Image (cartoon, rainbow, N blue to C red; front, side, top):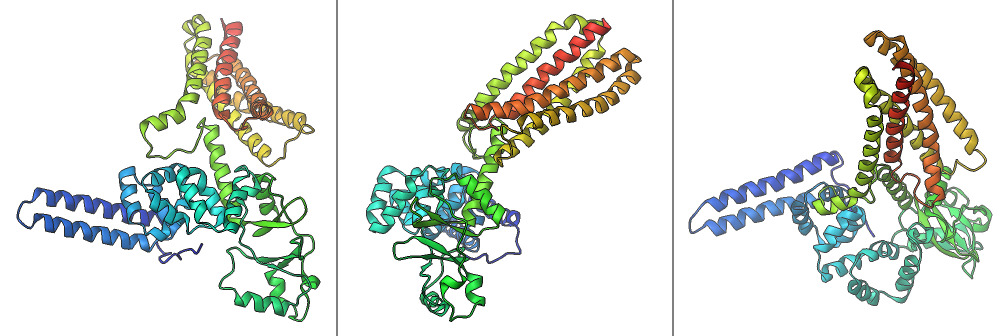
Length: 480
């Protein structure tokens, strides 16, 4: 699909959003004023003013790139979002639907009738249709498939046959193929006859008569070599390629590692069936990062910030319930030592420090471990070494910073024994945080769950309860 060029690059996204919001506010103010006025020309004036504001808003939207419009739609409340969406030109609907987040896309699709959905989908390529099809009504998908030619229909079905986390679900079918026994001059003439090259074309794919991939011809080699040379003389014979059932995130890492812009996708017989492009990989990495952040906070899915109260509640309640249980456990741990706290009130003031520092240290460890697991840097062979390293770091931090807070406790309360207890408790809780920071994500991975899922919530619960128990237990043993 062709992209609309950015016409005003000097404006930041925030500036463009502010301009759209201002136009929406101006429209509401003018409408409110005209509603208060009476007279025979009231309806005509109101209609004229309303139309002028909408025309100006539509002109602003026409000047924006589809990705910028998507950003603005995500940042607007539902009522304003639908107002802006109605002003978007029909030929741009497909581009924008692909750019917005899943949660916002759902609200936009719900506001469109079947005719509008079909018109938007007809402008899309096969891989883009496969991305959008699961969110469209079944009757719309069926009608859309009927309008496609045999090749497009087969491509869409092929993409839909793969899981969304597999390479096959992300591959693009638009590519340029050539033979190895033709000259570069012939290739250049062939390219000139094409109306345009597929997006992100940095190489041409060399195949034989059966469609078997033989190599790739980078565009830069095509341009700098003698036109009389044959493709087979200058092509790369060992390109990085992928199979459609491979993990898409592994492919994204390969794109980052080898600085790829595009790469071929081949079946088990080495026949070329598609290609991966850098734009899909960037989107995948971004989505993976966002999902990881949400999972660590205990959120199950991406949430529209202007979603209904009920929907937001459903997305958040489960881990809040877990938090409530762990907070209750921590309170009962404190309750076990009520007598000690009554005798030495300083314990109540100091125990949140032990728990808070432990939680912070545990989150640092768990974030590092989750990242390493995502990059496949953690294996059974290096787990014990990694655990020893984290325990050593926590031990040193505990002695240093526990010593510092121990001195502070002595200066505040005049008790060396209280300072020593504070140092010991801090050290032990940091060791516990390191142990759980390594263990929790690995245990989740072994159970087949996302290592980041709720890990921040769990580590905080452990270090709170553990920190209170360690500190109050030591204080009861040595100070009472």
